[in-house]
Length: 442
Ligand code: NAD
Ligand code: G6P
Ligand code: MN
Image (cartoon, rainbow, N blue to C red; front, side):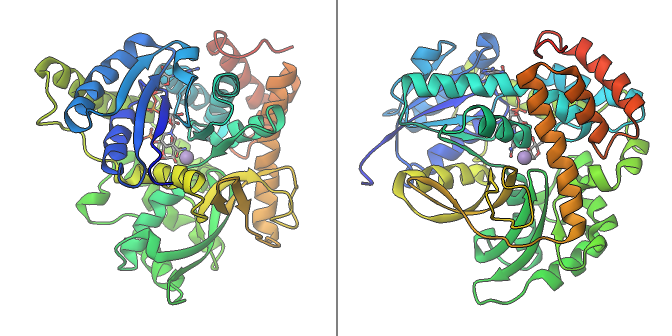
């Protein structure tokens, strides 16, 4: 079994994450052997910069892997075992508008939460459905590992519009937070923890964190979080300023439920007033990323291409991203690894909409995920989740039906938006900004 080598296409080849993922794939070849690696993007110029550098890296580190970068769907998706998808429809230019338009109306501007996330969702659905259709046409046995955002809306769209597609939706935020929790607990790896978690994507709670001996780590981690949030004074965990603020803000709402620990993204629903107050309307996270990660990654790609060698390559193995290999291995080798995935509830949370896409632990094997039972959840979380899942479902309905009304309802329903009137003002601005991307709404 281990002798089989896989063919992988990275969709969104021009992503800022691509070089780190290539380095990670190269570091994991013994666990997940690759014969062919392709990049696919709908922006040839952007992808070319990343592809030129990665081609050099591959030539020097793994010359046996066949490499190709293309914008042609047939070429990209033929003879493929796995699609690793991280597209950003509209790129950073549109992320910037998603973040800045709501702020004009004193509503928070965020990539995946509130009106920004809704706006991004309306762009992403079509892009993801298109890739699923290419996969089913050219490599019907392939699996798509999707971490394109906004994952909650994308997952709901694929559930509704492509219910039989072999797509697994996964988010790295719980993984990132668990790495921090493990360090807080004095463990070497998050894999030394056994966790229980439930929620929606970017909207969930850990209910249990134990080590392999059954020791409860929750009290120790909660005590730490009360002082420093999820921030750590360890170089490995150094983050951009805005993320440091986000990790810190957890202090302010984790006490709402003394038996759990929250996902950082809940800050946008539970501290929304403070988030708006501290936002810079002229300079949002999109600007920070364009001036930071995007410049660094593309600068390094151009440098490698000009040098013609990656000997002093500045790209590091994105070890954090190795969960993607864990997921591919679970499918390829039937490892039955327990992972958090975004799946249809279908009774796992017994007192919650069976058709909701929820983020819960699953056993992953060659046939896909088998969700574990969560049981009944408390009124507080249930209420919040019902409101948020309704937003996500209304967005997908709005997209599928071209319904202005449903999108207005979605925005009005979001806990981040104060009134129907403000929702409409934001919606009308977003429609104008997204006219090249959204379906026409009537
Ligand atoms: P990026 O803009 O650098 O890269 C995205 C690439 O996708 C671009 O090269 C763009 O041209 C391409 N693209 C856009 N629409 C496309 C389409 N329809 N078909 C093919 N390619 C298309 O963005 P980034 O910051 O590197 O992020 C990439 C994605 O990964 C985003 O969706 C981001 O939200 C997501 N992300 C998810 C997680 C997670 O845990 N779920 C973590 C990090 C990033
Ligand atoms: C986390 C989330 C992703 C999100 C990313 C944003 O990793 O899980 O879903 O896209 O953060 O990070 P950025 O650095 O682009 O603001
Ligand atoms: Mn995520």
